[in-house]
Amino acid sequence: MTENMWGFKEDMGYRAGADLTGFDVEAIDGRIGKVDKHSEEVGAAYLVVDTGVWIFGRHVLLPAGTISSIDLGESTIYLSRTKDDIEHAPAFDKDKHLGDEEFHRQLTGYYGAPHS
Image (cartoon, rainbow, N blue to C red; front, side, top):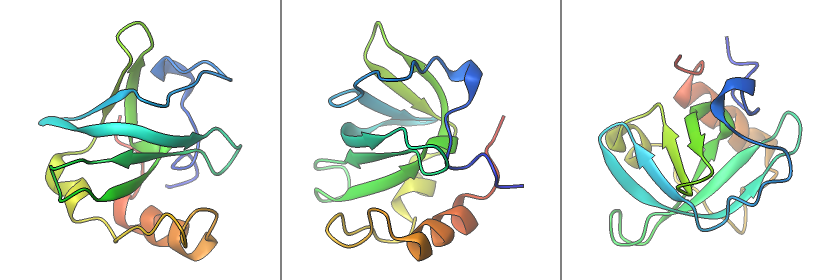
């Protein structure tokens, strides 16, 4: 089931209105970058992560459902996905894909249901 893929889970440590810009982002197996932009829009919550040199300066769009926890004190977001999962996700173009429902469907299919 994928209905929660684009929403923050209640138990992940997110507080509505929190500014996540600049937070470090950690995959299961290591750091992937920093939050460049985020949205808490109901049904369309996401992170845009600047991966820096890790995958050649690429930005990735991550549905909020890929987050396992957020440490507001340490400014770190932990994902329930591996670096390989993120590296092989559909290519994201921040000038074209923000708010693009078809791209959101592609990511929902790629990431599937949130991992617990």
